[in-house]
Length: 170
Image (cartoon, rainbow, N blue to C red; front, side, top):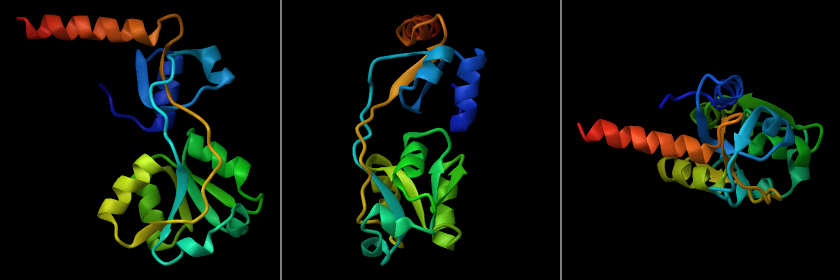
C-alpha cells in the first residue's frame, strides 16, 4: 500500500505503476479509457463548504460565493462541483491534501473548502473554529475503485487476499 496524493494516484493507475486505487474516484468516460472501474462501493452523500465559524449563514446560495475563493481536492467530485455549480467569478484553488485546505480556510487564504459530509464531520469534530456553509451542492454521484486497464479491481482484490493469506500462513 502506497499513500499518494489523489492526482498522483490517478496517474499511477493510468500508467500501470500500481495495481489499484481506492479513493473518492468518480465514474468518468475519460478515466474508463485508461483504467477499469468497479461498481459503486461508496456514496459520499451530502457535499458542503467548510468556512470560518460565524460565516456559514452568509453563504446560503451558490451566488453568495461570487468573487470568493474556495478550494477543492484536485481531481475529485468536489472540484467538479465547485467549477460547475459556483459562479464563474468564484476562484477554485486545487489542493492535494484536505488538511492543507483546512489550514487555508483557518488562515483566511481562502473563503471555503468543498468537502463531502463524511469528511467535514470529522474535521468539525477537531476544529471548533470552522462550520459548514448553509449552501449545499446538488450532488448525485458515487465512488468507484480503479485498477490497471485489463485487470478488474475484483481480480486485484482476489490476488491480494490470496497473497496475504499465504504470507500469514508461514
